[in-house]
Image 1 (cartoon, helix red, strand yellow):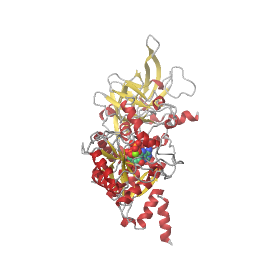
Image 2: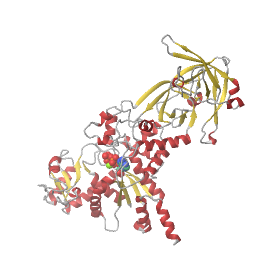
Image 3: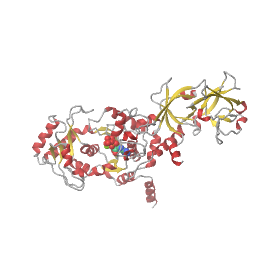
Image 4: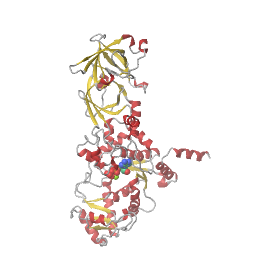
Length: 566
Ligand code: ATP
Ligand code: MG
């Protein structure tokens, strides 16, 4: 009794894919072995959708003591490149997963796949079709009307074999002929209507060079690749449900009944204000509409890394949205929430003034500097403190001062007092303007009794401002990102070119941002900061000493949600 309860309890924490796997393991299927794989096509950089698949494929193997292969599905040399292979490896590692020595390539199986094709030809199960792809598409029929048989369908095995070998020898042009499986042109599953197995491609392959002139279609490579690797659970997204019977059909050509990889499908990740199609992402890169695959506005793993998102935030987000059997559109706010949550816990606090105006503290001795202590992270006592210079001239945000403030303005105004975080209470005595009436300096006095830590600092004032000592400030550039698209679901706007939906204000560059020295000294790549009262920032990959560039990872609060609730 107690045992059953425990099993049910354990099951509660599992998603539906994990439950199916747990059941198979418990039933002793495949000798209790669990082997998954992540099968990217190296034709682009990985995006957050792939991260969902990675977390499943690698995560489930980790959870149940199995293994996960990394397999590059490199069956189309026209679109593939080693640059993509390298980026995919880097991104999976960054997310925190490892495939050990189990790195495989569909191209490694080209010989076995070719042999299988030859055998199927000899057994009358495949034929060479001389029609164009348009003609073949026309004969396909529809889900409710049967297809038409190709006039080349009944060639003899000898003729088919001869033609297929000559296709591979390079005798024919691309598109001149294809090899098709001879299955059933009336099947209710369109994928069984004599699917194409091989096409002619003359672009050299990044691994096999010019060895082959025929390349297997994804559908003729994928299921068998799983089989060759001994994959037990082939987990993928829902669009492959309709391909599953065909994969099983091809695997049966290789195997007896005792073993077939089990395919389980889950819902894709779709995000609001985001496009996830690799074709469209490639277009953005190629047309220079973004600064590259790792542009911080891209939904790519590399873009998110550059922007300052953390692997833990991404994994927490994916955990939260979960895996189901139904397609959905997830709010990008959920991802941003996970990012804020993680950055709040880990980022080092510092002061930066984005839109500076100078404040002169007239009763503070000229040339004097004193150091004040600043907490590095109030969420983490072990993070310690750092010291920050205070002097007679400081910068505050222009927005934190108003000459004629409304009633509830609690920041600095003529005659009013504010606290400078970690330092003193100051009082505004006067302002100095240029000939156009713009404020160039705010003149204040400070109260020496109110230094942080002294009893006088307990005095109540309504506002606390961040600030940076002017003579010590280090200049930086800040890149502020907003959503790349203006509409919630770009994929649904089928009547428009997706490029028309781009948000023209998705990148703002702010120069002359004033940093406290501590920030400048610690601006190492990959570090995470909270600029107090502003948001979370990370040094960009372009940043270097003397030319500091920070990306705003995310604002402190979700301004989109606020706008919606107004
Ligand atoms: P395409 O095939 O159009 O080039 P793709 O996004 O399917 O693009 P693959 O490299 O084939 O790219 O994807 C590798 C794996 O990642 C597949 O198993 C696929 O199911 C999964 N995957 C891709 N996009 C998503 C997504 N948005 N959500 C979850 N999984 C995804
Ligand atoms: Mg795909």
